[in-house]
Image 1 (spheres, rainbow, N blue to C red):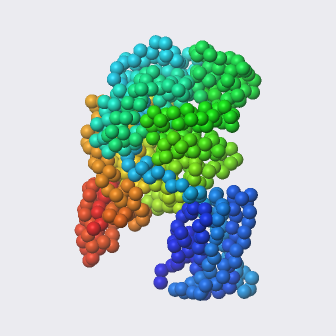
Image 2: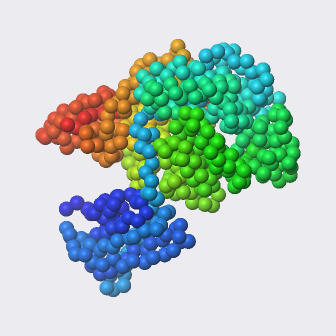
Image 3: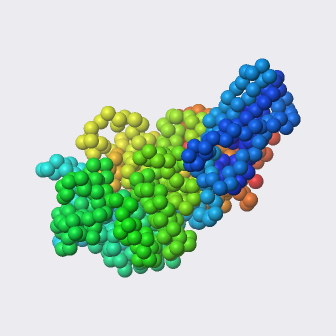
Length: 615
């Protein structure tokens, strides 16, 4: 007889329903200890974290026995509660000896309103606006920030400190909206359904995370009308548009702070009578103030200031609502952990009021259900805040797996996320291999750890050798397939699909290599886009793991229409997986499938992945 645990929170025989539950759900908890242990009593200790850590102890009456196990069961009522529940069990014998299990996490969320499902179904493409494509070489004269422009698109971004020891990020390449418009057909060929833009508003720095004016598009990108036209054309091609909302800080060079006096009206740094003065926290005006991570060029705002709240989300013409009205379909919230929960809720409500199917995605690097920031447990995915999060835990799990971390660790980590997240958040995750804040996956996989002790100067000049490139490309193709097969929106950082390399910022923000694309890799990504677009099981189907062992990982995505087996081999040798199916039909990837004694044996080449249909 197979081993049966006393409790397994992911098995419906022990806990039902599975995973996170909406408030008001009756959760059935069942212990199944071996009869031979002779436990006579059981109870569960429940702590409602968001209800001032209220403790509830429930007895678990004996319900009978099954397959050599006693059954102790109770219903946990979650009515009127939203937040995390921590529960532990105690089993006792007649002689007073006992056993304790736990604690376990139960996420209880507000399920009163459903999140829009469109974001998690299709492919997202992340564009760093200055570096994707330009339609002309811009003139920086008179623009905020004292910018310079690279005349050649192929030049390398500036990365060395200037005479004052600062990396000012004032060198621009001039990517613009017209350049994106001219490449919408290209993006459509990748199966893209959502365009996610890093910040587009006027700003002094090329990354535009220090907003200078929320009311206008940066002139190098175009005009507000150009943005509306881009959204209109994207919508016509079946794509939605997501903007980067940077609301935790502004720029030192900005209409609001105006640290360099560029703007004619008085900012907070010029006058305490400025309408923007209360937006910022000065410890000694005007030179000492709170800033994001101590970076003086990014003054932190006071998100509790009524005027700032009205400006960002409170009014009908607020930033959040105005740009949705202009054509955007959602917001990605920069450093969501550093925004108060009620501020995020306000953004969510404003977005829904303006556009009922607008989506809010939060930047969170850890398990978003248990995230603590500034001593506060965040409500990111408890309903009415974020509809989904950037799935950095998945990125870490994929990178670790293809660097030899083992399928066991992947399954353990990702099943923890699936169990802890409400379904709406899990299926609306923004899943990326890399972003503007991480090194390129191709570089990491190809270099194979050989970069860890190297200097920044070395990283700037690094390119993969032919041997490294061959290894990296194989692993990247398999990793990208895994990304496109996993629940949530597979998000391609511009240029990944054509083999762009680079370590951290700004090496990961080089210009897209138009005319020098890795065509074989590009065709692979196009095939992935078609796969994701055409297969219902990948767009919204459930996930069930078949294998997580060493270099092997396999799971099934299934919907009412179909079942797909997704299998991966991260190792240097071919691997064979036995699946209890009579027939498997290869869909994508190199794989051999043979029927042996009523089961299927599939053989995966080294560093590869494949998708097979299960008729």
